[in-house]
Image (cartoon, rainbow over all chains, first blue to last red; front, side):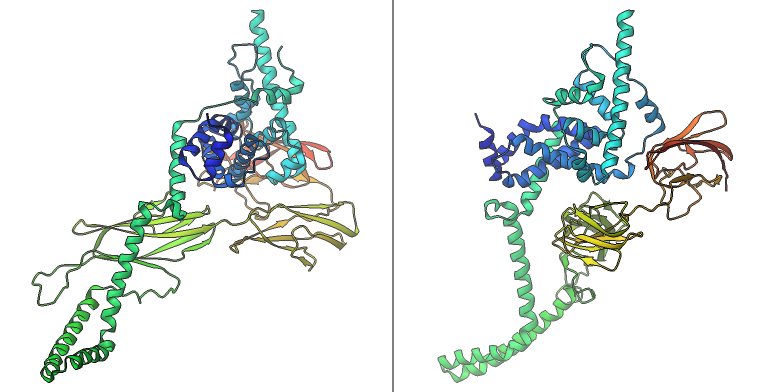
Length: 186
Length: 422
């Protein structure tokens, strides 16, 4: 069995097999992160590709001090932010149909717990700017000041976007909730 | 219930801790390709592969060719010395007849080289036409048969393509023009290496940094194909990001902190807007007066690519906040434009307010039947007069706006606007 450290060491030497192995080991976890930040699957794939290129180009800079996975994670989150900035012209643009859709609760439900897919769906339904801030604050646990720096936005913008994102999500979850209760009664 | 609506942070955090989604296998294929390409461009003896071997051989070939040309060009001047060497050899053998005999041989050789030179002049293209000294020229000739020499009865046409680039490197975004000189070519295809392939366009814009390979594929009238390659290096342009920290209530001798979060930059210039400047990364500046200032940050990268931003004055003016809508507008007939506007250019084709100090904002547009045609929460976006990509007819429409000013005071207004058609 190859340990992470061995794979990393061989990646530093530019070994192609090791690169593939590293990809196999972490692609799924990193792709899940990309999916949270991206506005579409295609964009998520772009982030994944760009991120791994960065990883392979900079793997020499990784010192075996911190956890390798958190080092990886940081690269992918930064890449996601870069990609978001590239498309930021449409930051607040929501299609009318989409806008109504995100105010209405989702209807399909089967079990009485929220699955990861459902939560991901909720995140993906958020407007672009909200989604970035929600991911960074709620899931990655960054502070608003840090988010403001990363995203080059005002700290207050980060706060207000977060609180709006939170409201939308709560509404959706309550919507799912009510739907379920109705089902249990009938 | 298994979740608490008031603690969605924990719910999401826990759920996504070990979340995994397997990406499509095509993503790895793309990465592998990109890696191979990168490795190809990075020269290290470790990766000395078949490509380099062929590239080296090609280079050697070109050098040899040039060397031969050089020889031909300089034959004239070197003739006397050649004669000398011949004579010295003759001297060693020391026979008078052979000296006499060598004279006509030398003469013959001289005339041969002249005729060679004549041929060369016809067949080898000259590059002097291109005035740009920085332009790098790549040239390939389709096999040439000399046109009018008596040795060949057949007359054949020669075809050639030459490529010069307006520039070989620069800062992103970089516009590059291909100057193509072609002779007897039926079809030309230019692949700019950035995903743009064109038959008639010779200019492209590289928006991302990187090394791009431009490929020109030419087909002559006989169906022979030729390709020319050249590379363009696009450097990353730094992105200036700055945060200004100041006491907004301050009126005199205000200390202002400037924080620099610029990416890819290593040289900075701050223009504080009061005729003071600083080259520090994160300077501190004291303003004697707290009127509106135009602060500018310019950043440079290692490759001297530069960009700049203007930053809003750190001092908030005392005037109150407002949002005021116009009563009419004339939408563009040429299609929906998403409604993004800039306050500085007073256009009449988008319906948007003049405003100040807006924190939260929501605008809705309805028609007379109460159908919502448009809504936005972005103050920078107005209504362009379109609904589902269709221009609305002339008439009166209702707008409704609500939100909050920066001083936390909220506002809500309703009004109407007349849509005029040109």
